[in-house]
Length: 132
Image (cartoon, rainbow, N blue to C red; front, side):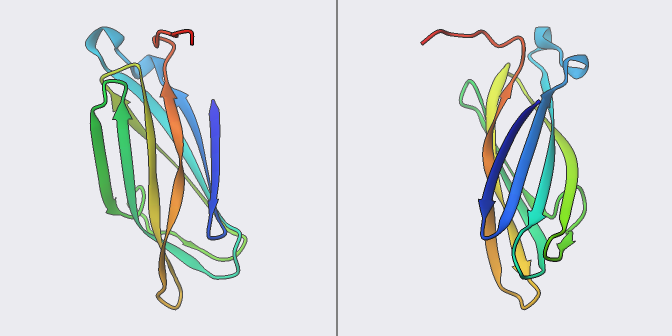
């Protein structure tokens, strides 16, 4: 499991990734990963996660963009010191890729701001290592 972390505007986002060998079918160009996200409010304002944006790129350069309200059907509210965790997944047609994005947050007084999601690598055991 790989771990990535980034803090924006006192909101910490940690992403843990794992390759799902049992659900992947390399012979059919189908590679699957699960990622767990931990969002922690380290600030002094209550915030709500309103929207998400993901930018997913496979090793062939094919890009998928995902936008929508909340995460996993929720728009969680985080008081100072609180965390919210969820798990989701993605699949690619190649054995590796990268993901990054942001969450649009809103304070209790209506101020909106973006929180960056760290760029993270999607790597499978089927990926061919190329020495530098």
